[in-house]
Image (cartoon, rainbow, N blue to C red; front, side, top):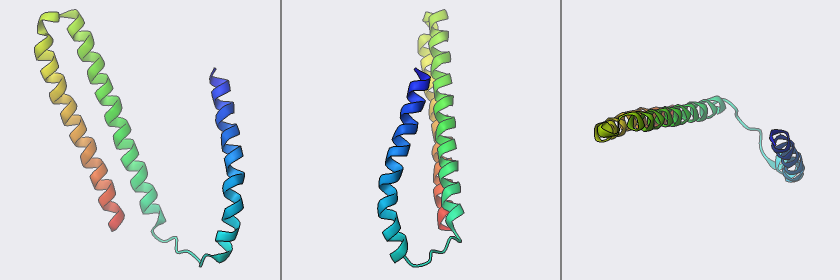
Length: 109
């Protein structure tokens, strides 16, 4: 199944690259020379924002899994576990949001 998915993605990429390349030749000929001075800032901000969101998603997933496991082991503590889970998930989400905002603010500099 994994090989089929990989092959399908490669085939889709190969099929769409020729479609986008046809219109790009005319656009490149008519476009003025671009200044690539600040291009790395946007790419870096995108990578940092993506990593922040990825880390938050993994962290919140681990928090939820641990809370479910803990509630299964001690059902009488479910309320306190749920409260602590929500508080911790909110803190992780806040840190991720802060990282995304900082990465977006870095684009303007």
